[in-house]
Length: 537
Image (tube, rainbow, N blue to C red; front, side, top):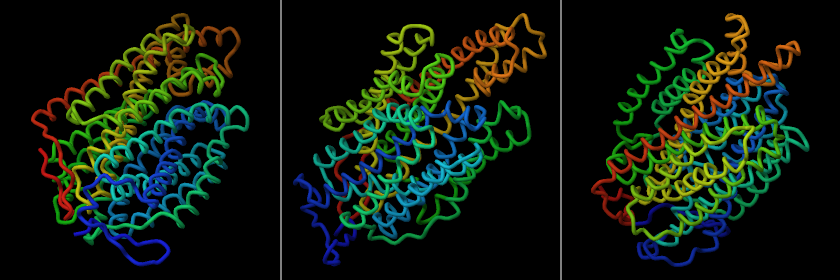
């Protein structure tokens, strides 16, 4: 039985793969190379958009008069929209056609990028970033499914290595491109650069990418989609707004408690027939390991880049371009590690390989405690390389583990779950560790303002935590501004160190969980050709 329906380009006739073709390692067809190339370019664009935004956030903060919570929402609005829509997009892709959903996602992503470039306030930018996340969901949800449809065996492992390398490439050039564009043309240019590339991908995909879909027509799980979206939004709202509104305030408590209750409701909903997320996949140890690994990865990277780049620019005084150059070793290491991980022989279990990747991120996060904005950049280098290497290696390994355990009719779902887990991790990392940053920054800043009356000291320390150094001292008298500048520099660096320590702890916790869950893991066979789920433990 075929693993899906493939609509041939040109003749318009449908064709199928035989079971023999499914399991061999023959070189990819021309359509396979087009699919791999276009999905890799699309993924590169999405990752590039994340890294260039992180570099440009301080410039946005000054231009749009934004506060830290606004910047966190610029990052999290994208992550929440992407994470919420990934699973329903995967279901739509399996049902309506993966190429159709891929093209729709690219169109939305391109148009919303143009909209974001015209934003004149934090609110407009946040809405545009939400729209970008909607488009990105269609692209991310179909990437692994499209690749998994075209490749098998060792060829698939190599293809996933190329796809993982596209993530690493976006990371590698993102800070540099973001810094160069922001310095030369202003922050709106980081979004406009997506427009011509997006148009080119749409034209090429429409002409060259083959269509595929699931042979099983499932209902669309709209209740699960709505409940998951509300659960994610409530949790992120509580974490991001907790420090500003107060952790005991009604909106924050409602968001956090509601997120937990809605999460439990989502699990109950997904136990019904034809779910958006087949919970039985989590009974497979390998799939569960992949899901946990990318969630832990997202927590570390989502927070590390945001607060590190902000500290380098706001406290260290670096330009966006120089900041991009300073974190370049992290992104280059990620690119190289993704390529190498895709070529690794499966001598180790997935749990062991992914545990090593997260362990590198653990050590890298702790090594970043050596960094101070006024110290030598060389103290930052070990942390950048180790964190980047762990980040890059996790992507292809987790992607392979996710789709190798899912049958052909579930590749869209597997892809959606894999990427949703990463976005949940990013959103939780930015929101949760953002609260850690604000609390630690405010307390460390206040401790250095002993000559300022207590009431004003508290207001200044809170302003530093929310608006940064330059946003706080801009309107202060000269005598006071110098004192606050020194206190704020110390406080923001202390906040960054608290974030890195918390991120390292989260990564270490993930390592332990992966090793515990992976005990007894066996080699996972290729998915059966009837579209069932592999029976690995």
